[in-house]
Image (cartoon, rainbow, N blue to C red):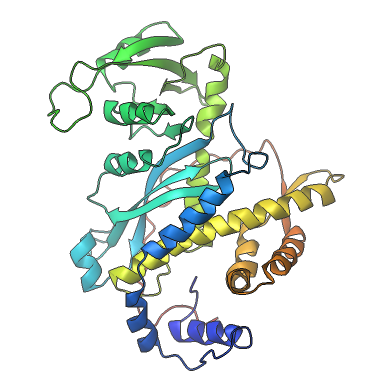
Length: 390
C-alpha cells in the first residue's frame, strides 16, 4: 500500500520491523528492493487469499451471510490505469484519452465477489483486449454448489448459463430487451414473468463445447419496474415461484451493487492504481496483494462491527466501521498479525480503534447516478518520483 516515494516507504517499513524481528537490516535501497522482488511470484498472494477465503467458508456457518440459503456472488469488470512503461505497453497496449495523446495504458479487472460478506473470491488483471465474458468463464470454475451468481447485462449468454448450472449453481442475469427473439417476444407480451427455453447461438462453432446446438436451458424471465419507471429484464435459473416469488427479484438484483462499491473501495481507498513499480511482475504483485489486503480488512471490520453494534445499540442511528480509517490502522499492524505470536492482541487493539471510528447509516437516502461524471476527467501520468512525500 505505497502512498509515498518508494525510498520513504522502505525506510518506514524496515524501521517498523526493527525490534520485532531479530537481525532486520535498516538500509535498503530502492534498487535492491526492485531487483529482489522479481523473485516473488504474484501467485503467492493468490494462494494467501485462497487460504483465508477457504478458512472463512469452512466451519463458519453462523458468521457467513446467505440469501435464501445461497452464497450470493457478483461478477463484474472494470478498468484501472497502469503506469506507462515499455514493459506494460508491450503487454497491455496503449489507448487514447480525451486529449488524444495515445499514452494511456489500461488493464481490465474482473472479480468474483461475495456481496453479502465483502470477500473477493477471485480477481484477474488482464489486457483490455481480454473479453469480460471469457474472464467470467474462469470465475465460474470457482463456484460451489448452491451459489447464486448475479451478472450485469454485458454477460448474458448460453455458455455462462450452462457452465453455471453444471457447477450446480444458479444465475441471475440482467438482459437487454433485444437480447434474443425469446426476450423480444416476452417484452412485447403483457406477462410480468414467464418460464421459457433458450438455446445456444446457432451460427457458432460447437467444437470443444460441452453442449450442442440442440441443448436447451429452462429459464425464468421477469420484468422489473424501477423507481424511475424504466423496465428491466431479468433472466434467472430460480424457477420456483413459491420459494422465489416475483417480489424478491428487484431487491435481489440490486445486491449486485456491492461489486460496484468494492471497485470504489479498491480504487479510492486501497488506491490500487498507486503501483510501487513499473514492471509487469510488480503490477501483478501489487494488484493481487490489494485483493488479499481487502479481504483481511473485511474480516477485521466484521469482528469490529459486532462490537460497534453492541456499543451504539441505543443511539438514534445504526453505525458502521469507517472503511478508510480501518485501512490506515491496518497498514503496519498487518505485519504484527502475521509475524508475531501476539496476533490476538493486535486484533483486539484494532477492534478497539475501529469501534471508535464509526459513521452513521442514514437509511432512505438516494443519490442520482451521474453516468457522465467522470467522462471529462483525466488522470495525470504517474512518474517514478512524483508520489506524495507524506
